[in-house]
Image 1 (cartoon, rainbow, N blue to C red):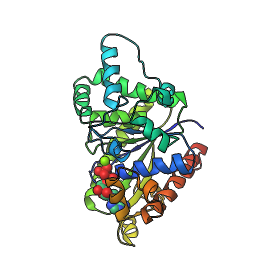
Image 2 (cartoon, protein in one colour):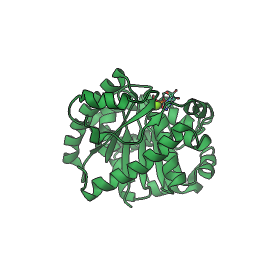
Image 3 (cartoon, rainbow, N blue to C red):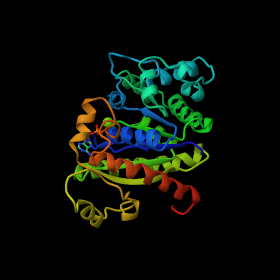
Image 4 (tube, rainbow, N blue to C red):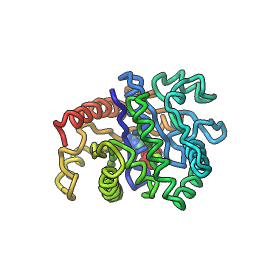
Length: 295
Ligand SMILES: Nc1ncnc2c1ncn2[C@@H]1O[C@H](COP(=O)(O)OP(=O)(O)O)[C@@H](O)[C@H]1O
Ligand SMILES: [Mg+2]
């Protein structure tokens, strides 16, 4: 299987991006046996914490370390050094990464800390170098074929950097709790997606596609139908929504407090059932795209 890069984005915070990346990654790796790399591209580091990392127990495999060292190398005219296969080799991983490696056998994570913010600021001021570094980083991940899935958790801000991550991805997924704010946030990400999808044709070998919306943190039945009927424009068709939905469930917050994906610590909670269905549906949908059955 060739590597699929999925980016999870919504320009609104608190919609369920991080909880979803953690749970979907966990199901794909532990239940379905896929090799998964999660990338915490949000300087808040919430995804990293969801796998037991904290600022007080830093690791050397952080996104800011990768990006900064690539940037320094580029400035001094040296070639790119990131090696995805080295990254997957546990011998090269330090604690507490090794603890995650034993708990989540097929799953790796590139963590972030608040310092990522300053690397992003450097990149904003030097978009010439930054764009090619991010795109190359993702190109290397994809072409190495080490992972079946790479899933990127993003911060809610729409920035140049997010645009580059979009260009480097294959599929965009948008979590949608039933609120107007979340829908506006989704709409803004889709605008960025359209720009990135156009740009991508200039750089890469494949398309960036919209994998779909999924409802999460749903408290009330019938909300989904109401949103379909609103029909806000391009992409807001019933067909682009995943069938699986993730109900509101206290297990998600409890799992967050335990520093774990909900599917790992509360596997029989309603939210976990939703994520298990969703992960399978993601695989089916990607297959449909690749086979040309879906466009
Ligand atoms: N299905 C759910 N049920 C209950 N709470 C949820 C659910 N999904 C997310 N949450 C809660 O909503 C908050 C925001 O979720 P998070 O995944 O961090 O969103 P984002 O990454 O988009 O900011 C968290 O406190 C999380 O526990
Ligand atoms: Mg988040």
